[in-house]
Amino acid sequence: IWHHADNLIAPARARILRIIAMPFRRLIMLLTFAFAGLGGLATPAAALDPAQGEVLLTVTGAITETNDGDSAAFDLEMLQGLPAVSFETTTIWTEGVQTFEGVALSDLLEAVGAEGETLSAVAFNDYAVDIPASDAVTDGPIIAYLRNGAPMSLRNNGPLWIVYPYDANPDYQ
Image (cartoon, rainbow, N blue to C red; front, side):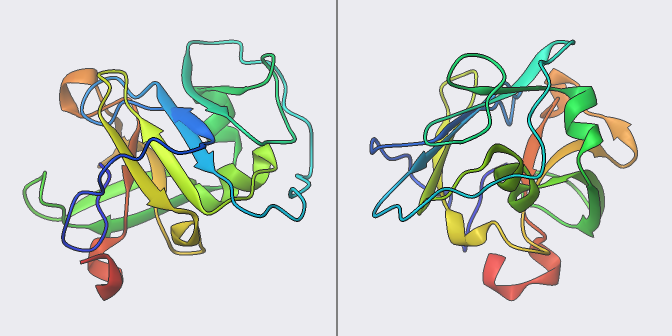
């Protein structure tokens, strides 16, 4: 789910670092960063191994770490190998408090060596939204792969979902 402030963020057609993601359907997430005035790219701690399973997330654009041509492809095992973050929150798309677990957006961007001002997420069904890179902070949004302790099916907004900790930060409400 891609939400910021009180509105869904409108998609942009600018230069982008793409993650192929599917929020409401299968999240083959294409994340794209729009870069302005890059001074240098971040250097991640380790190179990326190739994805062995079904690719759920693809990151393209100005990144320093790749494993599939000019992109970084992640299967579920690779995402679960990054530091896990979880939080409880309500959303406008679910009933009651939900627990989400996944990788912090900031950790994912560090893993691929990306910098920029705007992240464009594009779902398999072509739903697209821009996210300010400044949102990728500690205690910020995550790319969730578990909801209430269980994997998310395609029918239930899975398998990945970008979720903000709405209840913990008034800036996200």
